[in-house]
Amino acid sequence: VFTVVLDPGHGGKDPGACGKSSYEKNIVLSVAQKVGKKLKDTYGNDIKVVYTRNSDVFIELERRARIANDAHADIFISIHTDAVDKSSVYGASTFTMGMSKESSNLEVAKRENSVMLLEDNFEERYAGFDPSSVESYIIFELMQDINMENSISLAKDIQDQLIGKKRHNRGVRQAPYWVLHRTSMPAVLVELGFISNPEEERYMKSSK
Image (cartoon, rainbow, N blue to C red):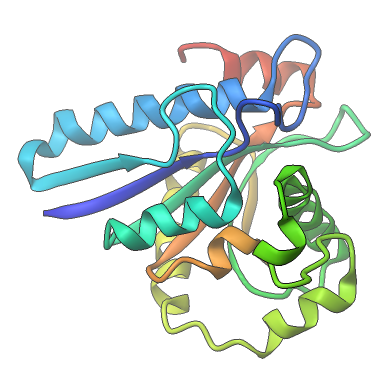
């Protein structure tokens, strides 16, 4: 049985990025549930789908990775929506773990990793890791990820599907996401689009 862990980002007291009429946490949960149903409808008993959350609850980053590891997952897909100050920016991207030369990628990772600040005893849980400090990410650059090749292949497949559905292609990229760093299988993080872009927010909220 092939095990897929779907990780809808944020939840509960953490709304994620906020659009004009929606929260990231609700969009990504809906998408994860639709993906899980599609997988089960297509592959039946040959596939097992595990959700890190299946309702509007807060799940710590460390626990999300632990759920995937405990399930001995074959792949891990974290689902998010992006946001920036400029409402004109749009498009979908898929990330793998890694340090990027692009400062914008690091800023996205900082924002997604900052959810750990909402957790109790986060300093102890994350061994002093500071999601806002560039220095804290340096160790990520020294890591050798044995799953990197398969993660990149998975990211390319997902990105191709998004492009095939006429989503604007922002490419396969690398960023130091904590949740990808802690998973022990090929893992990617998908930014479905920009909730800060009104047109893309409407699209992501729709059943289409």
